[in-house]
Picture 1 (spheres, rainbow, N blue to C red):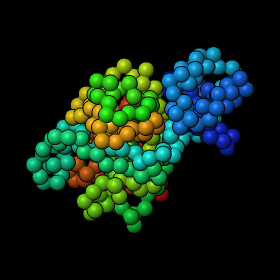
Picture 2 (cartoon, rainbow, N blue to C red; picture 1 turned 135 degrees about the vertical axis):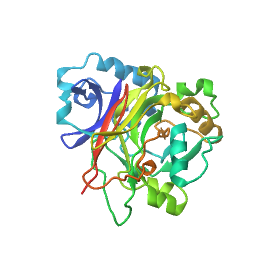
Picture 3 (cartoon, rainbow, N blue to C red; picture 1 turned 90 degrees about the vertical axis):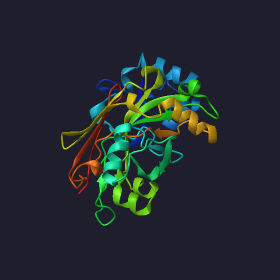
Picture 4 (tube, rainbow, N blue to C red; picture 1 turned 135 degrees about the horizontal axis):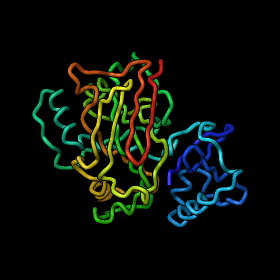
Length: 296
């Protein structure tokens, strides 16, 4: 099931994507379950509500169908309740290119490197990304698989970790490299407004057979800059969830960005950064594509 959040007739709604048609439970008088009011409500409602919504989507009345072109797609979770958790240096090739760009020896991390992005950085799959050269002139791209937690997880084993997943989405971990390196930590350089495009929807876990066999691709102005597969993660999705849940409680609707492969801008020779008017597209097989223009 492809489930997202849209704006239709000046109101925000949960929708289920069916090709070129969006199915909106709020437009069906018979779909009275209040768990459909927002994505946070849907996820928090639990597995029985997810199954019920799936059954509803199999027999949608015409009154609840809207052409996708008539909607504004928002981030699937427009305002997360917590910062987005992110993995750094989680692909071998990205570790190597980062080391080359920083003139240091490459060394694979022994444990997941985790940082966060502010909730205010989250934006829609097709929205413009603000650009302010007075703040940063080194805006970079990072295509990443996003994981949305569905059930409470604490001290869960890697063997059972995937059972805690609600679904998967596409994330572009936009990064201000000058801020990131100046402050010697990731948070400020990762949290600019619009620095976390996400979407175009969440594909529920039951429709992703293996999250470790998904192709990732990023294009900048139609030029492919990143192309890889999630099989090349150093720490797979199950290990990431197990590691995080060992020291904290993961809750429904928590979001994890699982790291990016090689091909980012600061790893180019010479470095290549985004500027006003550039178009960035991030795509993951089985999920979808997001496309964002740098404003200006």
